[in-house]
Amino acid sequence: MPARLIAWARELGFASAGVAGIDLASAEPGLRQWLAAGFHGEMDYMARHGERRARPAELVPGTLSAVMVTMDYAPADPDWRERAWATLGAPERAFVSRYALGRDYHKLVRARLQRLAERIGAEIGRFGHRVFCDSGPVMEVELARRAGLGWRGKHTLLLNREQGSMFFLGTLYTDLPLAPADPVSDHCGSCERCLQACPTGAIVAPYRLDARRCISYLTIELDGPIPAELRPAMGNRIYGCDDCQLVCPWNRYAQPTAEPDFAPRHRLDAATLAELFAWDEAQFLERMAGSAIRRIGHERWLRNLAVALGNVDPAGRETALVALRSRAAHPSALVREHVAWAIARHGFPVLPSPPS
Image 1 (spheres, rainbow, N blue to C red):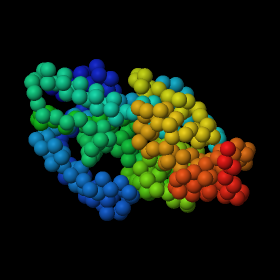
Image 2: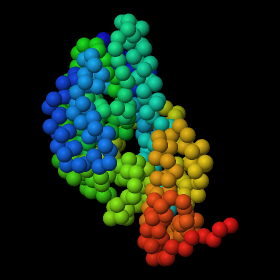
Image 3: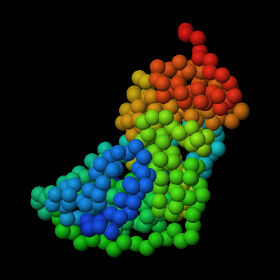
Image 4: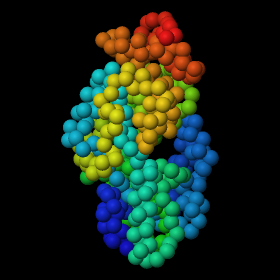
């Protein structure tokens, strides 16, 4: 079955597939330590599910195996890494993590996994299963490692010699007793570029991430104010952060996506901070329909952009100030506070635009 299963997965657009066993007892101590350190921040669901994350059969009774898949999302542009660095080096432009430039991957990957389950069912008859893609308490990286799809990099993401780390992971829990694959060896060696590149020092040690400092957490998961001491280091990153992946030597081998839905939408790979900050809520909801970004809402979108506008260099200060002052009297206290911080960072008092 595993050989045919991998072939079916590839037919559905997955770059790789493998089978893992579900005995994750050896991973539980690390999970407990991570939670005890508070590294999950306000992601209460991480603590709420606790060790259940490491016990698939408790989450989905009857589970015997996990089918793990990857789907590439690196931009089709062969110069995508250089273009990403160019955006990060242009403070007036907005940087959005490469995975979020197109449509929401959650639904697409889950839908393909469901089709894979149906293909298996057509071959063997009905069987128990449940699909996941960042949608449940699943130790995806650990399971993918055990399924032979790569090794855990020092930035905590899965790495693969042929794909780098620019791919999504999907999980199919099943009650089928499938033969597990053999894990692959670690190939990070002495390299610590990801630790050194993290703008906020969130990778506190190899294989150990303090989410509370991670820009992806700050711009996506955090509901309230972004800690003031971390704002300057965020630069122009308004949704997620790719620095640890951009510096990783293995991402020279990242495979371009074949999925049209992952292509950039609404110029998110080229937009300026000022033009995105000008979107009202209706425009945000319309343009981000079908995007993973939509779930943070317009308020946090403006919060993130305000921080980035506060980090614009002197050459773009005038444009940034005009944009910021247009939101200085915003109904949201969260937005107003971040706008005030950004204006003060440029050395000016907060002067809201007069009513039109």
